[in-house]
Amino acid sequence: MFDTPTPVVVSLAMLALTAVGAYLTGRRREARQKAIELETSLREVLDDLGVFPSPSVDEVDREHIEAALSEAIPNYDDSATIETVYADGRYLAPAAADVWLLADLAGGVSWLPYRPERFDCEQFARGFGVLSALVAGTNTVGVIHDWSGRHAYNVIVTAEQTVQFYDPYEGEFVAIGGTGKYRLENALILF
Image (cartoon, rainbow, N blue to C red):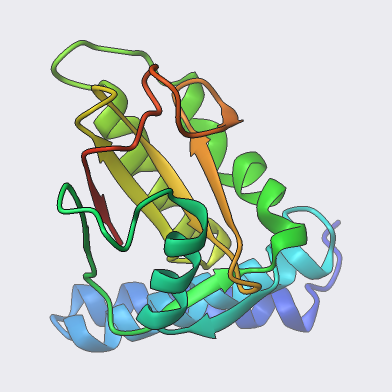
């Protein structure tokens, strides 16, 4: 009636059971570690099967991100009105050729309902960043609060030190500059 489960399925099931067991018995730190192992293993299995491909990622530092932003954003180095804040000490950047995977994997936030003042552009941009980290394993997706354009969207810094701008509410890659909502003259960028 049932086929014998593969070693991968057994391994994933054991990790899940261990995490749940640790959590239920109050061993929260162990539960978190097992949940991390489960998430990583599950992402690798889905990638290997071609079900849910993950981007190739490389570790980069803040200087890498700064250099990429400096190249991509006019007057970034000289601007007193663009501030970048870093929250992590270690960054994993996607390969430039795999950036489209982020839009496919984490772009699911674009179907969420727009709710003025409750779930608007800022929440869409944060959601895309969170899903990029959780689902795609990359955390060089910054949230841009573009005060000059009165809009929020994302910046993706790649391992090759290139930059793509993505608006998860619109579900598309965008160009900065001009007089519209992607002006990027006065902004806060959060990584």
